[in-house]
Length: 131
Image (cartoon, rainbow, N blue to C red; front, side, top):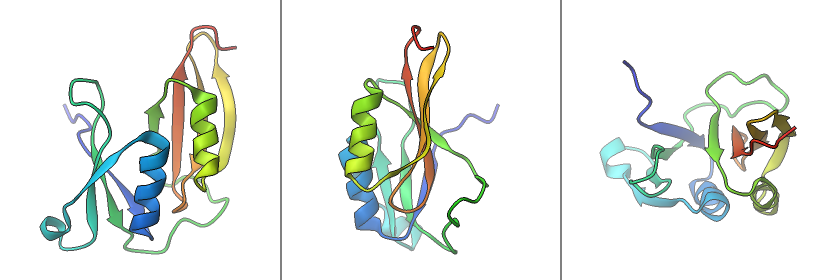
């Protein structure tokens, strides 16, 4: 079985991206550039005792995604406790709405955003009353 164990977010401006993900989701970062041979920062996304995975921010190796192009890679979705508060943090820190909040009826609230580097990601708040 090929279980997902790590993710990488490609970025143009490492400091800007670390500030965005740190402020919005509370992630912390460790410099792993010596191991990778390029700007590469490990992202600690939460407590090891909770479900989830850690990943990294890495220096983008090619042109960034074009505005309004279809998603052509993976989209990571972060679980959040308060959708509206998280959306406010995303927008305050330079993110943009890609697909507004919508209900997954009886399950959750979901939406997609663009980070400061042009990457798409989702947020997901479980709520069995969503409709």
